[in-house]
Length: 231
Image (cartoon, rainbow, N blue to C red; front, top):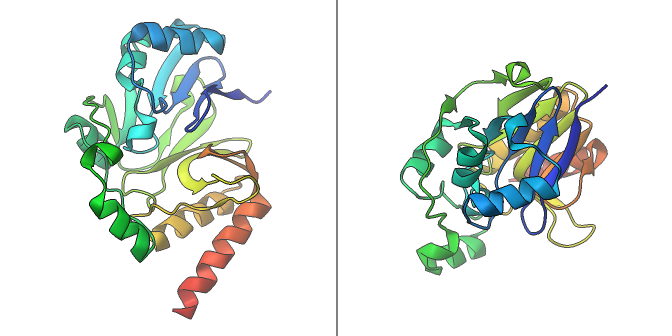
């Protein structure tokens, strides 16, 4: 039987719990808080803090790290992230927030730092640069570097084809999923999604929006490839 998957933090930026013989938490939402708030989040999702074997950060942006320190303290679980995300967290800053369009890049340059910065300093226990097997943490899944949204982005791919992809795809408007408008490397973003498709991902779970069937992702990646080819 496949592991259970559900968001334990909902709203603007989802964070997921994947449970097999143990539980892995993926991201920590936008809202900062202490152990009491973290305990309420887990209790509302019926997650025993003692069952949490690992916490994963998909990338180092502020809307994913709110309860990171509190969840690690409450559960005692190690935190795993890519080296680039870990470096940003250690300094209390976001990974680079880079707009895909000239207009968005101009907007991001004039925003105050607090508008895009996490201001959360956390040390990462398990730093990865290559693919990692998550079966020692109680789930049949792999953690795969998927750069593009940020250089330190990673995705979790389960053995049965569910992919937790952070912000590689976003859906702020109903029915309008699109490749992230924030991308440190747009070509790498499309390539990373194609890698997940090639490895059998069937359903994609973004942090912003609803789960997406692979046919939607194939269409988005195909459109991005055609734009790149045309210039």
